Structure formats: structure tokens, C-alpha cells
Image: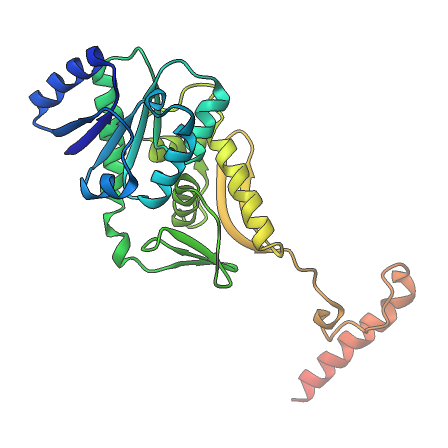
Length: 271
């Protein structure tokens, strides 16, 4: 395991470094933000970052990093924050968020969870595209397309659509979705799964309005299945029903239906 820690808290770094040394992990400490290409050259499994080190450019830097290096696990480990800040960080592409003060064992466990998800995705380069309705999911490109046009998905949103689609119509419980995407058990009352499902559903409905893909099973979870919303036209009415049949006056049309049915039986009997 090779990780980097972007932090200036000397006490935190010292305690965490000792634990990482005992595990035999390769690690380095970054005292200031570095360019994305420099991070790429480090060939890291994960990056632990304190957003306070980044200052006003924190959100922009995080978004740029996660967008350029989707295979990199990013764990935010920073001071007290609001729900809005945590949600924003996760939506920009962070894999996890830890609030300081925290125990180094928790940091290590979160990093290991991120690494496990990365290992599960190593076979993506050889996987076949998943097709559903108008949506094509390409794991090798970490992207989903609608009629050839790429959907603007965050890394977490792509992992979500990939997970749901791979279930092949099976209902996935919220707890299962959370544990498989974040790598640990969901805390009671956490609505992260619902937030990401809502965002993903909105993007799918905008790009492919004639289809419904994500179905809610209240109190349980979500199911992915492509269902067309197109209304059946008059040309699809079965030929055995007279086209001038009026469902508002069925009594007057019963003779027509019966006659059509009898004609069909006589024809079949003659054969």
C-alpha cells in the first residue's frame, strides 16, 4: 500500500506515521498542495487530505484532483465541518470523510476500505459494456453514455449506476449500497445513498426522458431496470378488436367482438 498524507498537524502526522510504519505501508507527507500531475506520478493507492491546508482553493483543488485521477482513493480528514460541507466534498469525488480529532486506526480502516473498492474495479478494463434502455455503461472508461453522449457523472455517481445495473434487476437495500460504495456500515439516519440516487436519477431522466431506470422500493432500497415510458399507439391494437369499437359503450359493441371471434373460429375450423 502506498499513500500520501496532505496535512500540517505534526502531532497527527507523527502518530499516524508510526502506525503506518508498523503496517509496512509506503507513505509520504505533503505539507502543501501539489499539482495533479505530481500526484499522478506518485502512483498512490490513496491520499489522505486535510482541506484546511488547501485554504480557499480547497474545493477547486479537490474537484480537479478527483476528476483527473478517478482511480485514486481520496479520504478527507479535516476539522469540524457542516453537513453541507461534507456532502459537497463527497459529491466532488472524495471517497470518505473523517472528522478530527480521530484515532489513526479509524483513518487506516477507512483507507483500507477505499483500497478494497479500488481492487474490485481492477477488472474493469476487460469488462463488457452494460446496456439498459438507451444507457450504455462502460466500466473501462468509468463513464456512462446515452446514444453516444457521455453523462456528466461524478465518480461516486458512476460507481452507483454501475452497482445498481450489475444487480440485474435485484433490489439493493440502502445499507448494502452504502457499505459497498463507502466500505463500512451505514450510520442510522444517514441519507447519503438517497442523495446520490436522486442526483443520478435526475441526470438519467434529463438525458433519456423516454425511459425510467431507477425504481424506489420504499423502506427497502432501489432497483435498476430500464422501462419505456412510451404510450402504446392505436396501431398496436390487436387486429381481433374492431378499430371502431367504443369502450364507453361496451354493450353496443359486444356483437362486433363476438362476431369477430366467431369468424376467427370458423376460419380456424375450416382449416
